[in-house]
Every structure is written in structure tokens, then in C-alpha cells.
Amino acid sequence: MSSRTESQDLAFQGLREKIPWYKAATSAVLRNPNMLIGIIFITIVVVLALLCPLLIKVGILRDPFVFDPLNRLLPPGRSEDGDLFLFGTGPLGRDIFSMVIYGSRISLVVGLSVAILAAVLGSVIGIVAGYFSRLDDIIMRFMDGIMAIPGILLAIVLMAILGPKLENVIFALTVVDSPRTSRIVRSVVLTIRESQYVDAANAFGASKKRILFRHIAPNTFAPVIVQATFLFASAILSEASLSFLGAGVPPDIPTWGNIIGEGRIYFIGNSNIVILPSLGLFFLALAVNMFGDGLRDSLDPKLRGKT
Image (cartoon, rainbow, N blue to C red; front, side):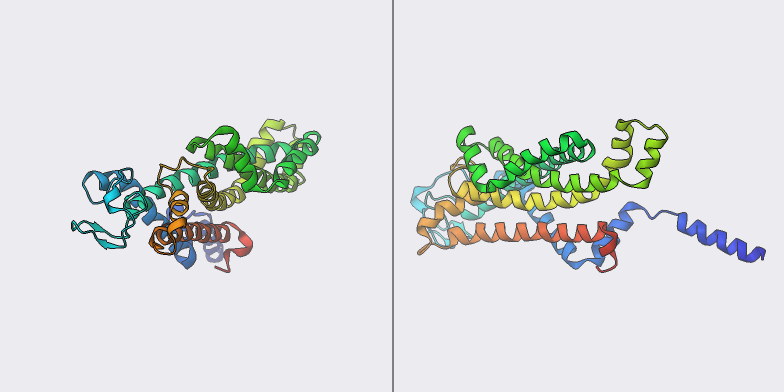
């Protein structure tokens, strides 16, 4: 009898031992090939974006802001002077490969900034709307009004008012994407608000502040983190669309959308101008979505065993 009790105690002690977070994260990534592929590609893009200024300084990459009219619209290969242009040059003679690498910096900055700002702002709005019933209708009707306008159209209107600037692009896309996060968080809060442990906290006289920050807000983290990854991908595509239409980042700054917009006129004879930034845009958005899907599967108990 005593040996059985000891074995049970050891079993329970093993259950109580927590797996280190980094081991759990590594295990989750290795169990999900899509998530692993997404992380690898994102890491490559981030490393290239961070090293871009250094690569330009040491001469591995050409300065994407320097115009060279004598070498405009060159195909991939070497110029008459023997200079190597891996993916050719654009209408102004700028090296396409260097512009694409530099453009990844803009995409990452916009994607990360919009994802964080929209997730935080949407979470605050969703928590307030979900917990305080009197404010729910007012707040959510306003959010519905924003969502009723096509996102890209609203972003174009805001950019027309604010002017073409990187900070304005981030602001416009944050306004567009925040309502989606607020609806997700609100639905989670409405479910948690009716749970037994929240009722127990109310019965014991816990303040609304304590309930919000101790019991409700922490339970919204998982869906918000997953939503933030999709906001990241959406912001990258939206920024490229705005720049392509001439309503985003100033045209002299080499972003992926600007490069595609600059090269669309020359697509028939110089498709290389459009292909490389388009592929970068496609694969980065795909990698972020693959990472987001894997993250959702890892954080959702219902899907955890299926990955």
C-alpha cells in the first residue's frame, strides 16, 4: 500500500514539474513543419534587412537611392562596364536586388508596427466593450461602421488627408485593422465574463480593475497573439498596395510596392523589375501566415493534438 502511495506521489510530482518554455516552444515548432518553414524564411528576411546598411557600406549591395541613368533597364547580368546586376536595373538605373533587400526593411517595419498597434488598440477596445455592457453597443457600432468601408479604400482616404509618409501608412493601417481585433477580443471577453471563476471573484468582492487585469485580460493573450501574426501579413500586403497606387510611402523610397508600380510600365520587355519584389511579397506574406497557422494550432487545445 505504501509503495503504491509513493509511486502515485512520484507520478503527481512529475506532472507538477513544468517544462521550460524554450523546450516547449522548440517542440511545438518541430512538430509543425509549416511553422518551421515560416520561421526559417522570416528569419532569413529579417537577417538580410538588418544587415542591409552594412552590406551597402562594404559594397556587397549597391546604394538603392543612387540613380545611374547610363545603366537603366538592364537585364540580369553584367553591364558594358563589367558591373554585375544580379536582377538587372530599374527605369532610373537603380539595382533591383539592392532595392528589394532595402524594401524588406520597410515591409517589416510596417508589418510589425501595425501588428503591435492594432493588437493593443483592438484589445483595449474589445475588453472595454465586452466587459462594460453600457458601452458595448456604442463602441461596436462604431467599429462596425469602420469595417463597413473597404479597408484599402479607407486607407487611401486617410493617406490622401495625411499625406504620403511612412508614419501615416502605419497610422492608416492601424485604424483599418484595429476593429477586427476588437471584435475577436470582445467575443472572448463576453465568454469569460460569464464564467464561474469571474462570478466567484465578484462574489468575494473583487474590484472591476482586479477582475479585468487578473482574470479577463490574460485570457485574451492567445487569440490576440495569433491575430497579430495575420495582421502582420495583411499590413505588408496593404502597404505594398498603397505604394503601388501612389498613396503610400513616397515613390523615391524603394519599397516593394513602389518597385512593382515603377516597373509595371516596362513589364513586357523588363519583367525582372516586377517579378523579384512580387515574389518577395508573396513568400513573406505566405511565411507569416504559415507561422500564424502553426502558432494558432499550438495555442489552441482543440488543435494541439492534430499538428
